[in-house]
Length: 104
Ligand SMILES: [Zn+2]
Ligand SMILES: [Zn+2]
Image 1 (cartoon, rainbow, N blue to C red):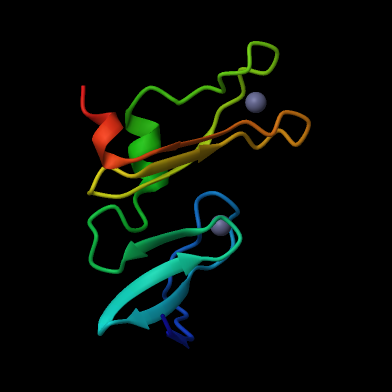
Image 2 (cartoon, protein in one colour):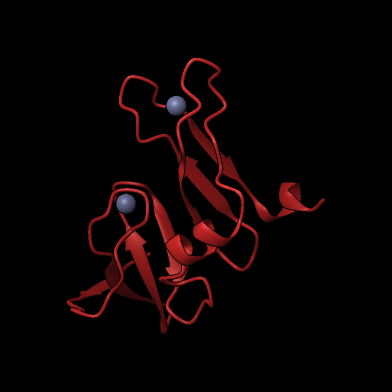
């Protein structure tokens, strides 16, 4: 798979590491990707840029580590994929959920 990165000053920040997403073309579709967190999202996905907004409305996601219980940073897509990380470096808790598992 090859892709062409595009410099996009309007790209949102990755909600996990807070650096700007890289915009790429893959098979004529455009995605935002973060190489560090290994995540990607279609630029037209309604979740783009809304992670913090949604986070404020809902109950905050807390770290699963009983010694930590910090507030997780999270990324999600409309297909149900979700990744959350604990910003506490001593903890390092990470969780990744695919669309199949998230259905309640
Ligand atoms: Zn990132
Ligand atoms: Zn933690």
